[in-house]
Image (cartoon, rainbow, N blue to C red; front, side, top):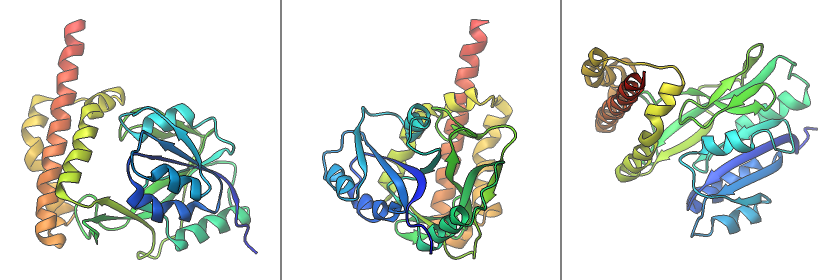
Length: 267
């Protein structure tokens, strides 16, 4: 019989996301420890977290969950950390695969992280194309002695040298359901917040750009998202998201280039 509680510490960071938490937190019941970092919610998020058996930690607002992972990732009860967002629901298929992995002693010493299949949903509809659509591998579990967390948006997670990732099995249908954005306004608000730190994160990760790359970025990003990543499969939504990605990627590169100019002026 599979052990219902595994030596895993789940970390969830949220702010006024009770509508997601009521569905996502109960799915973490297989974890020995659930840590919910609340960034000042005014809804009933804290109450829901308490009812789900999570330890609630009140924390000042941070630009992204990466800041929490970097600060507290090595202070958990267990070495294995499950990283998930309030808008991600871990399905039974994935949970069963994790339980088998732990209970059947398949975790060799060289495994530093575990990736699981994830599917993105926009306005509650699964995406078939774009850079977000289809099945994607998503970091779900990381061993805090074999994995590094830094406070860099979209760039803050890295497997340490000498360790390998483990990919959970996939059937191309089941996996984590990521209810990524439920409206156009929410999508822009969410990513505008990311943009504030995106340039610095890329610079710290040794990425550099040029005026030529900036000039080509809008069309290149659209081509990748709409044609190569088959955004056309999602109709108007795919067209919109491809234009959105073109805007975001170009804006991020502009910010990166601005940082490069400032750094060059200092030397």
